[in-house]
Length: 72
Image 1 (cartoon, rainbow, N blue to C red):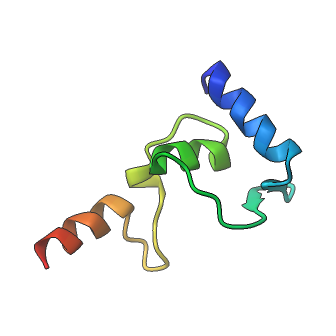
Image 2 (image 1 turned 135 degrees about the vertical axis):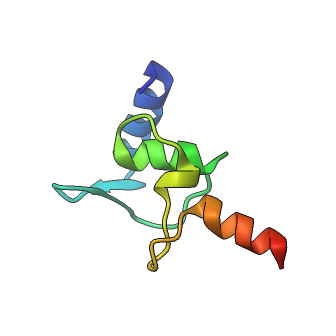
């Protein structure tokens, strides 16, 4: 993670937006990020591509969901 992301993530933890559950972090409430990748980085604590990391309960990635939605 870049230094800016580290600072941003720590800010979210300090403000109670991200809650440390031991093995994972959980949002305390809805929170809007500038991109799906920024949200993934905050939760995962590492560089991440939000289009491939975020998945629905069926396992479809955000990219797959968006591609399918564009065809409809």
